[in-house]
Image (cartoon, helix red, strand yellow):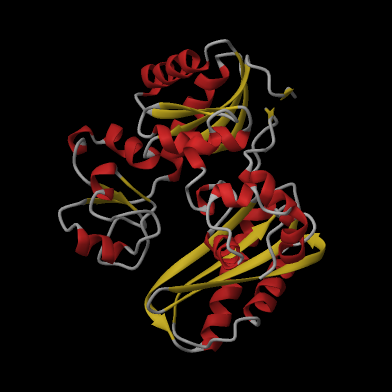
Length: 356
């Protein structure tokens, strides 16, 4: 397998390719009459049922419709939207075509998922390469993409957000603080709302604040690995290795939204056992054992909690998955009515997270 390590040379770059509104764009290609109209994809396409938005076209996003929004809420905000069911096979096929185009450039390609990948490139003109790449994707698949350019993956990933839609943006050590310095810490890839709140409580509110923070002080709060790592994020430091090893999903999961709330937790247990059994059946073809099982509970009206259990030793047979799922369910202290249940099996070692 190819592996390219990038230092800070002026001709070596990491590019992040992100397909614009990917799922909605695939659906518009299949239904050209929908071009320019607000399109919402989620569940079985029926907005009168419970379910969440998987993706929304840019036209729908202008009305506050976004991924994770309940379908019923989306329908209230935008009753004239076109609602379509999720079609995984169509998206996987379109994604494979795009990744083939990326590999045809001769660059090292690290696939991150259906709609994004890192590329390792040597060129004196990264913008020219990026524009040419986007054009090739467009010509081969009729899909638009945005390309972020950086000296490492962190910079390239963040740069993509500034290039959308269908643009190119370069973010390097040279313009890092000019672009990001005054932005809140959760503008950084890898920092979520929870970590941002803890940083804010320490008086660290912007990327510049984080870059100037004392690594030892943050280590005392977030841990000896995570604390210094957060400071490096603030300074734009990150992994610059692009690896073309085959993409492996970090987890597989099953979840179900119930059209009527489940108030009886004896039934909740039965449903978790059933979903865990379905997941275990899916894992029969998975060569890697699961190392952790996570249960998701979404209470009515729309409050979500998760709890997980580590598997020692790792395993994926039905008995192991079901037992771990029920053990994770026991960690939920609430016994409120439930609208959604999910069970997820994780592989490998999950990324380190700051302690709660």
